[in-house]
Length: 408
Length: 127
Ligand SMILES: Cc1ncc(COP(=O)(O)O)c(C=O)c1O
Image (tube, rainbow over all chains, first blue to last red):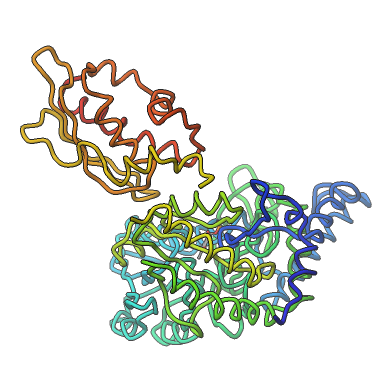
């Protein structure tokens, strides 16, 4: 293994605890990741040492808090290779980031007769905002299909761009169900050539591989901080000139330059989109999270998960009656969704829990995708930097036990 | 097997459900699902002249908890009035299932058959 998982695990206090008396095998990082000491300490330090509201106080403590809060933004900009930290907007989560684009950019630019293109593999967070925007504006919503082996059917995109009506293409950088890593750079090139903007949902990709907004080429990109070792918040990156031209999403304090009785002027980026008191300690914690991940290296984390995947896929395939969703090695990240002929996903998750193994069961906020594969739900195991082959072995043994108990 | 929830009693109902199928000439015919997990039950029931439930059948797909609950419930509901069914809740279902304590995530699965029958009785004008 390229990563020293033993040493990494020691950085995550949660692995000191037991679940039902067993070692914790955490395979649900795609839902939310565990937190390293560095992040917890950074947030504790804010609260115990330099907490005050930001951008307001004229005293030393407030300046320290503001410095830490804005310092984190610079780190995050570097993490995604954003040209300007002012393009990095703090939001509650990836969902809010995507909604910000739908409300602020979408309502002004999507009109009756326009088309929004998304894909069949989208999480509800990158689906429902566009579906509702299309309904509200009288626009058309079209889906790029997913192939039977879980890849994006890229050939279906150009026809959807040909008539010039498509104004926006929204696409996940990594599917939270299939693990698929679709060719998003190509999607962006095709969309841009047809005059459409591109929104990328990097909630799953950013924790596990380098995400470079200048290389990938989106106009907006949303990230979930809590999935990349950080606290419960997210960021939205957008091209400066687009963000500059957009109206605010939420109104109130801090996002304002001047307020008169009957009109107001907006603050500069990024503050225009950060109304009210922001998540101060969380932002600092998120900065610490990208420092932590950066020190290990996103390439190394990606390589580690690919190695785990290469180890896991053939072993999982030996579980009787298993059906694994998604493409093969080389086209996917460390998320493996599957279903068993012998057991409902709920029962799989509940029985694995007895062994201290945490996986997700359900539709993982991707109902249309599950419908596409003709199943109501699936079970999902997802890997991160603190997982190793022992965790895979525990999962495989646990699944054999499930089949033994529930099969007949 | 160390499992509390996956005891023989529930597994038996899961593998060999009672009253599995559709009741002909049913007074109550209802389908309900749990979209978050994909559980679905179709329940049919007949009532006698005094309004008591005389027979219940179910079909559906789901986890051990929802399917075992449905199987057991088709037996338990017989002889009850619609009002008695309407008054039932989670505690009754837990008792029916042998005194299990259901975790938050499984409550919806276990109560799906009960809630389906309540809805069906209402829709049929029996409640
Ligand atoms: C692909 C994808 N997009 C968006 C989201 C939503 O992220 P959040 O819960 O941070 O809003 C998730 C996570 O659940 C996801 O997996």
